[in-house]
Image 1 (cartoon, rainbow, N blue to C red):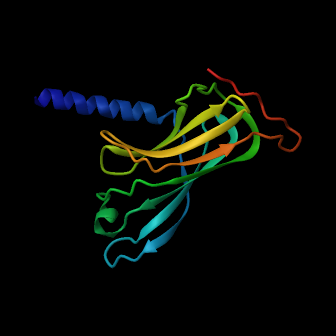
Image 2 (cartoon, rainbow, N blue to C red; image 1 turned 90 degrees about the vertical axis):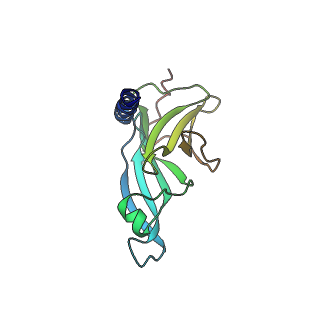
Image 3 (cartoon, rainbow, N blue to C red; image 1 turned 135 degrees about the horizontal axis):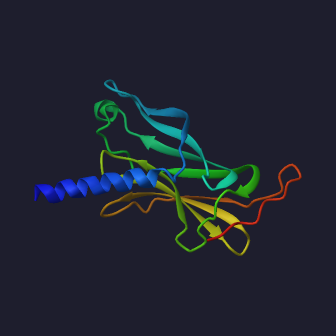
Length: 170
């Protein structure tokens, strides 16, 4: 049984490490305190930004709650299962790699929301009828995720005289 758990843990670690490299890396923009905590950091809303890893000229901003207090300060608290995403065109749109064009889309961002088993994910879907990029944020768990979601749509437009590149779909 010990060998099985060790192998399972090693496999999970390998999957986590290999999947992370293809996803966007976020940068913190700031945070807003929502509740004072006498011991440990305050509860807050954290705002981060990331650039779509395959679509140049699109940046996304994510707002999500961060639990404070002693548990939050030690990294032991489970953050709430809500988040909001807003994506905007920030330059000429071009595709550095082919994007998934199926109905499930493609994961572009993943962040841990608890010590284990819970994460915040953002998927990109492509609307074939008008060429728009649709970004959906959700939280997932091993057993059950949260139905609380938020979407943002980017309809690529000409930027300083440069027309958007046609989507490269796989």
